[in-house]
Length: 238
Image 1 (cartoon, rainbow, N blue to C red):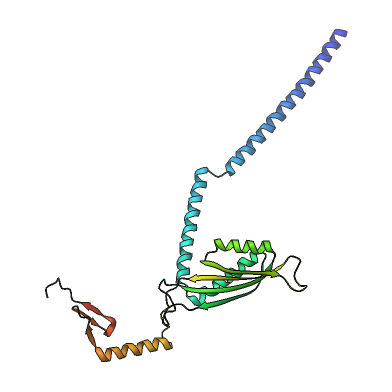
Image 2 (cartoon, helix red, strand yellow; image 1 turned 135 degrees about the vertical axis):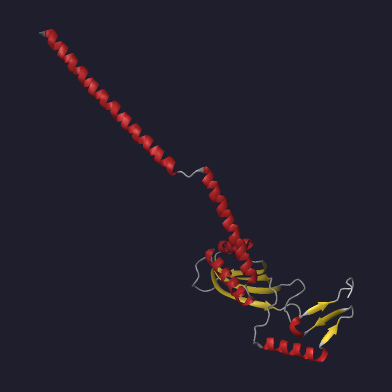
């Protein structure tokens, strides 16, 4: 009797151990399967290295194309739109550096002949006075940021003094910065129907009435009518 009872107890313990061991093994395999599934999901979400490189090259090409297009449009932009754009960009630069811009005043300096307003190098000089309020650090950051400004600028003078009155916070400065911008622009053709356009037309018609068809002294014949120009080549037998 005692032997049978002992065998039953041993068998019961063995069954319990097998159940517990089987449960642990099943749990471990389930956890491992979930981990493998998670790893596979994350690997599927990771982009391929070749695809990343291809996307990078494409993005760089698009950026370069946009830069070239922007430069082309900027060069074609007339001064009437170029200067306000320049002033707006300066205002945005000051605001981004925590400088409160209180005024931007362009001072156009006419250089060169009276007809073109351009000098021999083909650009116009535009002085700009910027007044603003901010801390000394903010002013320095704004001036340093001008090095990376998309337009050609030179800092001529900087004047800073403590802000007067109770409106400004402690440490604020009133600053006046004079910049010189170099505006590379070709003289614009007169608008059709404008006074300048009519004056040039009258001048051209007067020249045609007096001279008609003229020569330049070297065998070249120039017809002013219809803006047709013909030149006789000396090396071709007529």
